[in-house]
Image (cartoon, rainbow, N blue to C red):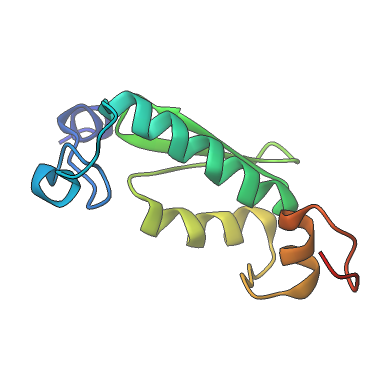
Length: 113
């Protein structure tokens, strides 16, 4: 199968409410698959900005990652995204790094939030 056919088939991700409606039955506001992916992509961009990685939704079934140098990767899930981001940035992404957490919180490293 060619890569495009694999992308067009798409598959639900465990965190999509469309993939597991019973798990999100208590939700009061309406959600669409597209709206969830857009919100997830915005959050991923906020988290990966520190690494110099930009994320775009690609065809509603994959993510396109781009580094500051123009290197790109297409991944099918968030689970694959982290390894690809590390390859593109040539750095280990440590989610507990103090400078990284301070950047996410919008404060200078070493200062109280």
